[in-house]
Image (cartoon, rainbow, N blue to C red):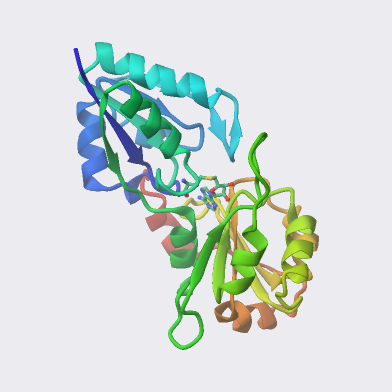
Length: 261
Ligand code: SAH
């Protein structure tokens, strides 16, 4: 048997933010390896597949990446359609490249199916464009997280050079993030928005400034992205940098977002 491995983006959380291609593949899949962050209703679309959680959560790896790589290669010897289901988009902070390298080395065919990444789901939820015309012509996608053995990164410089940006996997590092960005030249008054669990019913968001980020970040326990840019100014000012938490979405929209109702 030489099966095909599909690296599939599950989107940010809401099961109906899955592409049609992904849904069709899940329905046909023989085996699905899924991240912990993927919504159970999305995994359940794989009606005939063996389902294997590989337990990655918020960037922490409870199943070693090398072991996942090996399992994908092995599964392609015994299953025709192997799906590796990842949160958001597989190609953005998703370690897809390591899996692709392992599949290529083993001569296993693969295909990548994109998904809606967290930053874009967060922008959608806020109704604030990441590339607001005349204000933000560049957007940086960054993470301050550096895994063991990786070289140091210039993430703060990249972020400081861009008009707007999205910070992934920043939870628990708010102080370091604010300090690094201010040191890299971003004004302390730079407006930010923190969006937790974008696309899900339990989503919430806070508008603040870079200097006040550490005060608010502890309120987030779920997956959250930090968005930065001048386009967030109006709302950041309207809450005067205080710990005002906006309700995530009005009640009717909440229901619509909760696709499983
Ligand atoms: N490949 C994923 C990112 C994986 S890294 C994507 O494209 O979205 C995991 C990080 O993504 C989390 O630490 C958090 O910063 C962000 N994230 C994932 N889901 C999210 C959600 N629903 N709302 C806000 N941030 C989310």
